[in-house]
Image (tube, rainbow, N blue to C red; front, side, top):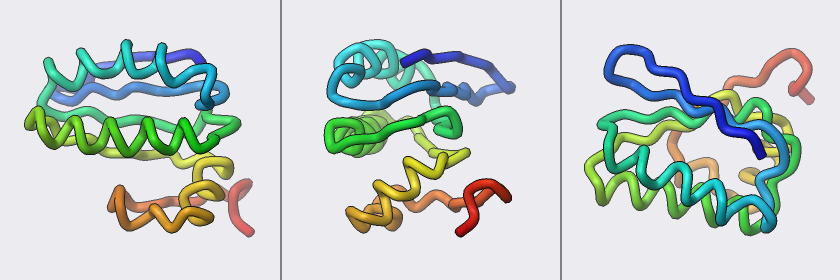
Amino acid sequence: MDLHETRNGDSLRISLDGALDIYAVTTVLAQIRPLLASNHQVELDLRGVEELDGAGLQLLMALKSGALALGCKLGISGHSSAVIQALELCRLLPFFGDPVLLSQEGKR
């Protein structure tokens, strides 16, 4: 799993690329948690997430809840088809509350 940070004014965008699975969650959590504590607004761009398992879903939920507790607004964008499938399967789209925009490739 690769993370790329870009700043746009007061907002930090973190792009994730690769598998967000049980093998990556510990590392991703260790990298993102401090960023939530030091920024008021963070966007997770998930368009590069190729695989998302139960551990990855738990991580996203923990990051959303943790950000709220830290006073950080965490948004999720660029939902890949793997992310959409996992969120729909587990009925978690409302939990995150972010608009899901499907690319032409991701439309069913």
